[in-house]
Image 1 (spheres, rainbow, N blue to C red):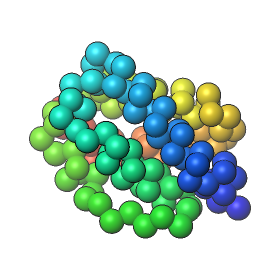
Image 2: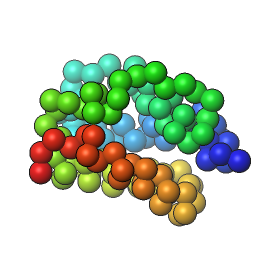
Image 3: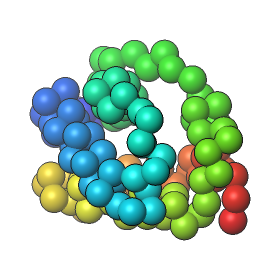
Image 4: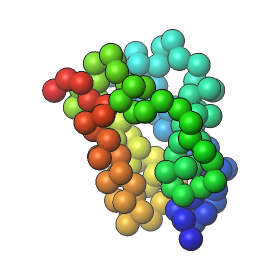
Length: 118
């Protein structure tokens, strides 16, 4: 069974992604990154990306992480805050500790593609 199936598929992933972006846009440090973004489009896109990453049937056809984040001047501190928010959202959604650890390992492996500044 994939993590996608274990946690209820698209409905659960969509709820997690929505809460994740709600929390991100509540952060004074992160809010500026989303000021001119179509959030519904981003949430839809991210739901597909995460569903695919968790073993679901959605196909992700977007840009690479590096291309998507290029020029945004994302720092290690920003990356860490985003990761902390995601971890909190996953835990609040009832994702088991070992699965949270696995997901956060995947997130951690993307740091070099996203962070441009220390």
